[in-house]
Structure formats: structure tokens, C-alpha cells
Length: 221
Ligand code: GAR
Image (tube, rainbow, N blue to C red; front, top):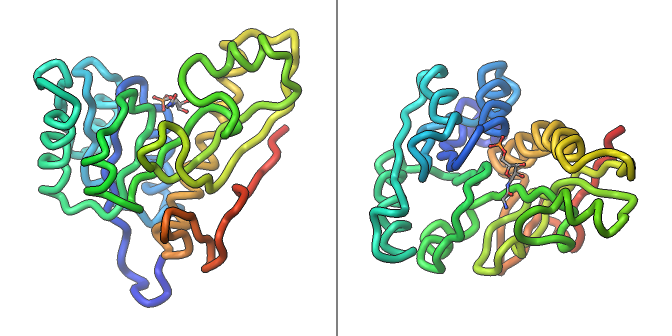
């Protein structure tokens, strides 16, 4: 909670494309009063995303805007923003939202968009991170919360969760372990934002007023 406004919760919109386990961690922690966030809308670009069912079960407003219905990326993004802006979000949380955002959208919500990417950024931007980590024989892997900028998976990093890789595990097993830590670090970063401790200024992430040149790293078993 913000020290200057103790009763106020941060209004967040959550964007998904799929299962929504990260969304569920936000719902659960907000419900348990461990997260000073009001989820004002859950929006998916896919009508069959299971996360929409999770949101409806928690009585959260939902919307589906299908990217196929729009001529280009920015037209889709403008429709998404029009839907979100009905709820005046202060934070936009990308939780497995598998669309690249247009520069227009990033500017519209500058400094207010968080993403989680399943890799220890700057390593492995893009897709298939777990298989690529195993293929490369890396000893460590994890997930990173960052502010969104125009650079794909390249915005200022905030918080990373790290695990040791077992070379004998499958990509699916590795993914499950990474997702379990995401459910802790993503609400944590959102809580810092809700408290006003995490801010974005001049293209950098600041925590308690200090520029983060490296993300905060938490090791998980
Ligand atoms: C998460 O693991 C997240 O890191 C990843 O999608 C998954 C969504 O899972 N995001 C990306 O790959 C974005 N580049 P969920 O729908 O169960 O939360």
C-alpha cells in the first residue's frame, strides 16, 4: 500500500493469451490481501484462453479482442487500449500475452506495462526458452520481470527468479519449475509498483529511488 494513500489499491489490467496460471497467482494473492492490486479487467486475444474462465470464476470483468479481426498491429492495440481505458488502469500486466506490442501501445502506457519472460534476460529473448536453455547446457535458468519498451523482451529488468538446471529434466519439467517461481516473483514486482516503490524514469527502472542496473535476483531451490 502507498504510505500517502493507505486505503488505495492499484488498478491493474491483465492481458493473457492462454492458461493464465500467472493471472491465478495475482487473483489468489489479491484475494488474500497480500497484493494491493485491484484487477479491473482481464483481456485475451484468444477466446479459448483458459485464463478467461479463471477471471470469470473470480468475478473479474473480461474481454476478448481477437487480433485476426484487425488490419494491423496498431489497429488491434488501439482496440485493446480502448477496452482497457474504460477501467482507467494504472498498471498493465502482460501474463503470457503472446502478441508483440506496437510502439503506439508502449507509448500510451509508458512506464506502466510489466511483462514476465521465462528466461534470465538478456539471455533468450523470444520463444522456446526452456528447450534452448537445455540445448545450450546452461546450468541456470529462470524468469525475469521487466518494464516493457519498444525492444522485444528488452525493457529494464526488475526482478529475476533463478533455479539450477538439471540436465536430465525435460523442457516441460523445466517450464513447470520456472512457472512455479513466476507465481512468486511477478506479484512481488507488481506489489512494489502498487506501493510506489517501483517506478520507471528516463527509460530505467527505479526501486526505492535507486536505478536498477541489474535486476534483483532471488534464488529458488
Ligand atoms: C509464462 O511462463 C510466461 O513467462 C510466458 O508465458 C507463460 C504464460 O503462462 N511468457 C512469455 O513467454 C512471453 N514472452 P500462464 O498463461 O500459465 O501464466
